[in-house]
Length: 201
Image (cartoon, rainbow, N blue to C red; front, side):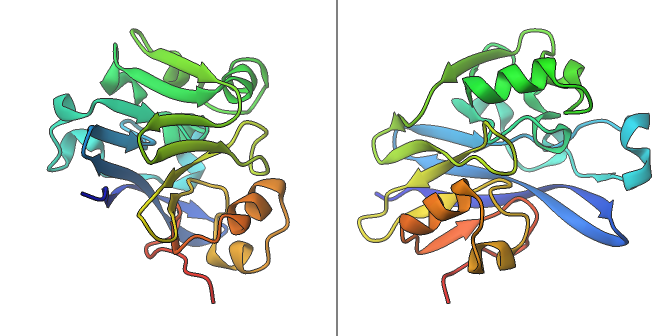
């Protein structure tokens, strides 16, 4: 049975005069329920200029207790603000990403990264999470950015986080991560800030 991927709208942010969606993605795999990114659950003054509208995971038709594994594509505030909801469960992140989030100034909201009880499984490079579900480094947006590649029996489907913030970036890839993603020849790519998946032209 192939994995089913469900986009979950968790926030909207004002960026350069436009409202951007923020999506997390739920992968229903035969061996477990995997959540990719966790959005935001509270408002903070540091990001007030982005006028966030929140639709937190706690308000969605999702049984949080049923989530087995969490993947952080990266640890910017709009992708890790719900990590605290999964205290005690493994959150998979690239070692470089966690290091940067903990040490670089103006990178993220650190209290959200290291909320009480949050437990990271740090990996370096590619990692098979479950059969047919692997994590692939895709540096560019951040040094430790990673994507989730879902094997389908045909061309893979990718949950890409911010490997690109718009479809146009994948049409004309420029970062190492975007080029690596295109080399996978995916059928489609879900992005965090686009309502519809990208499909190769």
